[in-house]
Image (tube, rainbow, N blue to C red; front, side):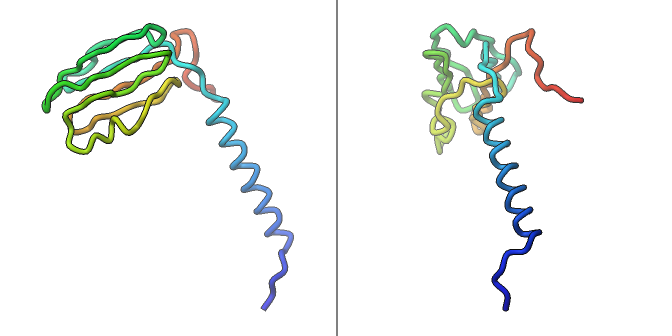
Length: 123
């Protein structure tokens, strides 16, 4: 039984390490800060709010009202009538493209980028 690393093993390890570091770099440094928040309920877009202004919003859903709070440039779901409250446990978000969802109450919160910023760049 051989326990030696081959050249292919070393190349694979280097490739996976560099790919992982690149992905982490993009996740942490490649995203841009959001400028606004779109809040949706079962009827569609309920309200659009600026992320820079502190606000509290009660969003109606089939189970009752879900409370969305914007504070210090971050948005979170603070209270919801859903049974498991996973939406509250998701914490707060602030980066463009991030989303909070309360599936049982059909409420979602999405952080959007500034209007002049591209969503993606492709070649």
